[in-house]
Each structure stands twice: as C-alpha cells, then as structure tokens.
Length: 69
Image (cartoon, rainbow, N blue to C red; front, side, top):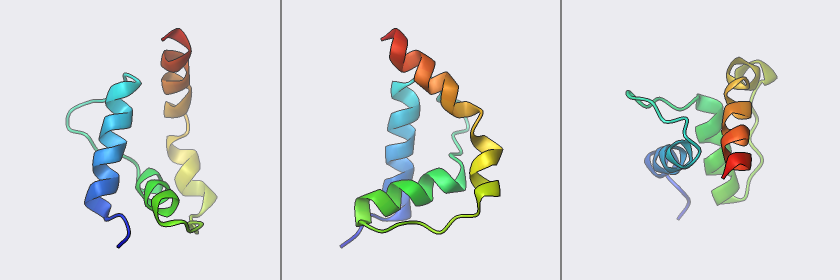
C-alpha cells in the first residue's frame, strides 16, 4: 500500500519542524504533499510549474537553517 495524503502531511510537518519553518496553522503547499507521496510511492508527479513557483521562496529558509545546523 502506498503513502496516504495524511501520511504525506505528517512527513511535511516533520520536515518543517526540523528545518525551522513550521508555523501554526500548518498548511503545506499542495505540490509538497504530491512530491512526498510520489517519492514514497515511486512515481513522478505531474504538477504545473506555477504551483511549485508559488511557494519556492520558502525553500531557501529551510536550506539556510540546514546549513547552520
């Protein structure tokens, strides 16, 4: 059985907490949930680039926290 959307949400929450980008209420971008599920299920997601571009500015924040650790 593959990863469910709820399981992907939990993984996204754990990642956000680990890199210091977690906020309440926690609402990960749709593309992130799709990417997590796809990686767990071994498929390539078909997402429009516009969905990813909307939330990409969040990525450098996490990367900078990871570098500092």
